[in-house]
Length: 618
Image (cartoon, rainbow, N blue to C red; front, side, top):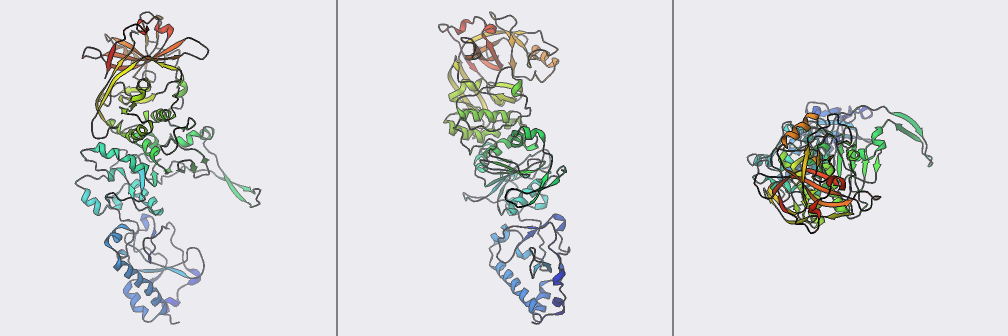
């Protein structure tokens, strides 16, 4: 074999390895295999290994004199031929198109050992993947979705004016770190398409509600959702630094006789004792965002990049990077809801909320409705950048539950169980100043709506009619107005202005007491839709002042047995309502109250023969 002096000088036994930090994916090309590295390696002047030839011209000249050069040139010619035959679409869509190869030549040892070597060349876009918007026009395929916190950092968005440019190219280096990382992860998994909300939804679309409604199918049909769970905004990325752990090696020989070592470390004790905490991930920034709830519940598979480890969540399991394995997952629309055993962990900002109630949170015998109530608990305390997104951010789930329940959604309550829906109890809630929903809908407040009644309850009210007008084309999204016409017992209430400044008594003692005309004069604690329990004495005083000269009533909707050992005794689930300025029998909800028989006293309107008024709640 005839070799030139340069080829004879190749140190075959001392060749360098491929530089660290490079990774590869399944290639789209037959004769090229791209490797990707970190941004600091994105320089064509950085050595890749043992220098061979500087360019293609030098290779062609040397090939006439050296058989090894000629062999390498035959492979390069196949690359050139493949590029010549490739369509423009292929050149644009896939990384490292050969027309951008530097065709400088470097030699390294084979990555997995063995005789021989690899020949590498730089690419001018090794770390600048070709990214652009693609209109699917009804085509289907495998794609990933991103779930992330927008935060307050500068976003990269698409508008109608920028759409044409976005379809040509998007500069990878101008993308936020989270967008760059999700593209890197997707390419490492050979997923060519990624759906990112700010880029794939025109942010100035006149009917944004229609676009937001489409997110249901986008996340539900995604091959994989990549969640930047630990990032508080899009500038943080998926690969955030982790707190260091201390590991201790322990010799380990299982029964099979294969010896080795296992690493011991200290897991978080709270999560070990309450494994639901692993699943809910409530300490992560993404879990505090409202839009992220339905993105997780709609996803079939999610790869979570958390503060301390990665998690993979599928329809049946949750796997942790450090060996955790749970045969259950967070709430999902892809797992059966019809079984009464289909319970899932839900997140909350306050794990003590459930035990701080002066009465138990109870459940409905309909397991699908129970799932909905679970999701409301998880959703209520989550934050929104735009307060008007309260209903749109849950509209995808509402659409699916409407199909499963075979029921009409009215401001995120259900027409066939509307009385039960009206009796939500506000936990740490506050009404918002702007109109978002009728006062009788939980969407009119910020905070957790606790919903659900026991099997042993009895209706005392009748829904005569109900109407909600949508603001846009999404029937599950924003609403303009709504009303419910109800016939039910109505009992006047009187506010007790004597406020317990010490906060003694039951956990909700800072809330105001109300009494009826014939009931126990001490009255009972109310639950106005205002956060007195988590506020101050001054908050309670302010609420009293706001209700001066306001006539309030208990709208009694249902009754249930007080306790199993108190036969014949009932408590009455009621709304606190007040007359509006419109006059007539138009009222709005102010809160919730549960009246026992002693507090209620002799209520004439509960007499079956008594005339029960018809009121309209707005």
